[in-house]
Structure formats: structure tokens, C-alpha cells
Amino acid sequence: QVQLVESGGELVEAGGSLRLSCAASGSISSIGVMRWHRQAPGKQRDMVAAVTSGGSTSYADSVKGRFTISRDNAKNTVYLQMNSLKPEDTAVYYCYASIRRRGTMIWSDYWGQGTQVTVSS
Image (cartoon, rainbow, N blue to C red; front, side, top):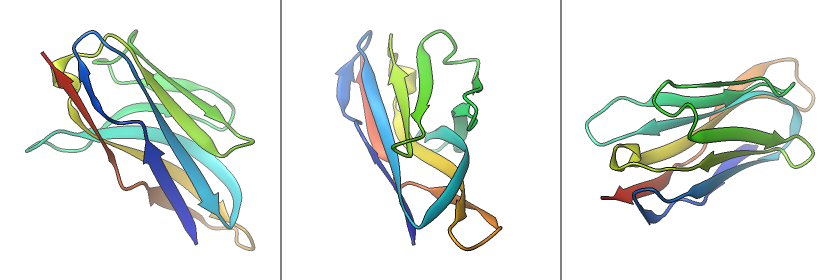
């Protein structure tokens, strides 16, 4: 059993900052790419940022220069530092990880349950 658990979402004023965390736990052998996605009401789920196991990062154009993704491989945790938040950043934020479970050679997709970020104007 593998779980991803997010935390850190809350209500914040425009211009403020938040740090989201997502910890993977369970029978884990390796973790590949980890990503943050977000989904606003009535919209599709979009990728926000990604980080490989080697630390390479990529970002959606809408968050470049404001958000920073990082990971702690020893803790199986990925973070999303969000600065200069805007009302349009309001969404449920989900973390994703590609994980190989112990005793297998198969990589599978795992998602967290989501954490709500609300930015007031």
C-alpha cells in the first residue's frame, strides 16, 4: 500500500505565500518524477510543476518565477513554495508521484487526495 498525503493548503490574501507538502509512505522502492497539479472549479486538472528524482524542474508558464518545487528524497516528500499568490491560483492542489513498490519492477501512478488553496483579492 502506498499513500500520498498533502498538507499546507489554506486561505491566504493576494500577494501572500504558502508552502504545500506531500509525503509518500508505504512499501516504496523508488520514486521517479513528482508533480503538483491543480484543478479549479469547472476546469480541467493542469500540471503546475514537476521535479525528477535527479532534481530537474519544470513549471507551467502561469507560475514561473513565483512557485518553486523541491523534494527531499530521504523523506519521500515533495514541496511547492508559492509566492506572490493571485486569486487565479485558487484551486485544489494535488500531488502526483511515479512509484515503484518494493518487490516489483512496475512503476505506477499515485495521487494525493488534494488540498484546497484559496487566494482572496
